[in-house]
Length: 476
Image (cartoon, helix red, strand yellow):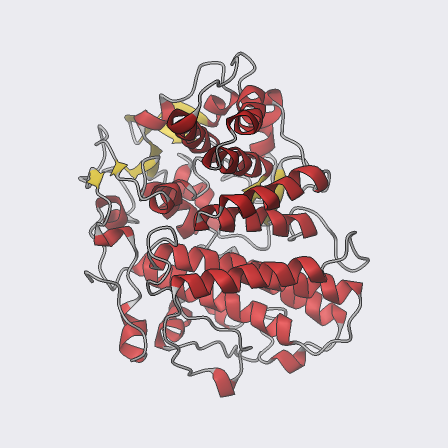
């Protein structure tokens, strides 16, 4: 098999060298070495599937991103009795050689380079091709959103701060050893929004004959859902509201009922009926992260290292269906609160997919955007639509102003727990993080103040060493 040319820099090479052998020597779609090898819509479809597979790996959306998005905040912690993973993140003691930072950075760019190949492919245009290239634009935007939020100051804090390098060239020997500088945070966001605009313009209104439109693929209105998240993180609440309303009015999505919520999370199948899931990454019998997966890290049938904080659990009313997604169990004999959103560990043919964006998040984005722009009435409509659906006994919120924002953030915490989003609520709003010590946790830094340098991950040291144009984040 042909080896894959994907070197962004030494950091990317290092990441590849550390990957599993089969990842270095994949068959198509992921192992097509140059964009010229993508000649037909079928080739393009295979390349898109390879792009999604890259995004689903353990060192990106498959585990590191959703774990760090909750661990660096206040939803989970690492038990003192653990398998040795995520200790430095639990304690906020990571350095420039941190493995997870290196993995996210390298796998993020690997995924971006796959998208670049698809976008650059010279294939005669038709609806299939437009859909698939649109997905590549949207996936690239999503990857850049993760990178700029993990490795740079929030847009809302300093849009002129160093962001991450913007790479748009397809992988080839000619472009393998470029040494790009870090673009400004604002420039990265501009590129993200431009890519999402391109994706939405390219995608046909309906599904295509080649491409099966369901939650395993980025559909047209999934682009708007991602866009709503981008604008929310940017603090542009007017455009966040516009994008979210487009999803609500035109996307055809609905919330899962309270009675079906636990079953919804236990079901690994992609959906095409608009029920809750807007976009998720598929993990199957043939393509999954096995013992390194997100489910294995949470489940007590696996490593079970990541446990739920008491503070989060206390936020759920007894009648709240979401409380059923956490159970009071034990970890190696010690009492523990266990996340049950990812429970399919022991069945090899029934793996938990990685939910990237759900309709519930869109409603919460809409509520927060209305609240930040002074429209309390509409904010309450969308906030209560979700809250009352999850807890039929709840009579609804009636708050205004700052308290309404607080209620929305608390509802976001309860709804989106263990999906890797909590940390970015703290960073985009520039809030301190309170992480109470847990009974059986390893020592951890309890209070993370605003401005603490480790609220931003380090650029991997291998990248700094190889690329003289890339500057390290302060404090590393």
